Length: 415
Image: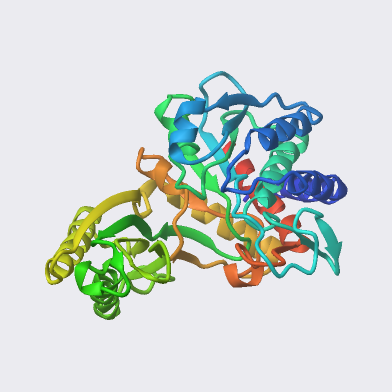
């Protein structure tokens, strides 16, 4: 580390501190525009974000996904944003993308603060998406602003990718931008938390299973075929697999074993009718070592075999989502090293490089050969953040620290 680098880091930190109140207000403005997904009407938030960015001198490219694609996908509107800032001669240096998603699950019940109030109490901001991941709209934007204001790189470029399809899998967010050829960064950082850098994550297979029987009056049940009893038999076979999954251990720190969850079930027409149809949706988390094709084939085999054991029962199986696991690419070491180095200074702690049982949009970049990591503003664990639960919150000290770490990291990568 040279004296000039040390001075640049100090200047970046000072700029972030001096503009931190502005960063907090920026995040509050983002949290106050709902992006509940479903229903997924997220274009208005993108428009508001673009307006706020324009006040900083950033012209956000608006990339609306065609309405027919969005609606067929189960959402209402998506406009993805890209901000591009180049330094030095055109084509010189590396392009680093920073991706965060604006779509979030609906607030649900049990809040003690307005989920869209962005209220600050005891140094914490409360609201849906304060931690995941509108916080990183703020950390990434202000890290870039600091970089431009005081570090002024001589080469490379930074792109902000603000997308709106993480909750449904990312295919119409980063996936769509990449498929359209609208971006091709060399490295990327995706929204995360401040006290770890994530280099790998689980994959996810989601499926919808429809179990068909034959409706009948409950007074003469023998004239029908009970689809619910058939579904229970299939579910028991699937849950038996969960016991087997516990015997499979991942070698990636932070990831344990595969698991399966049935998160939704519906069926039947009335209490006095033998149900003729039952539908359930399952979520199968895959560790990085697993082959998604083999996992899906095995799930289908278990379901079909269990259905065949019940006379009169048939099944339809539909894949809803296949999100592949994220595995580290060789080129991501520069990101890991820089983030760990600067977190040691800013936070005073050694950041672990770990895997996470979640799945994220990063996999879509990695599948295109773009090395990436997950790092951003948030607490030590998802549990602490209350993400996807009532009273989601962000410690503003974590927002300040992450912004500094990301600004310093960009400074390293673009000099």
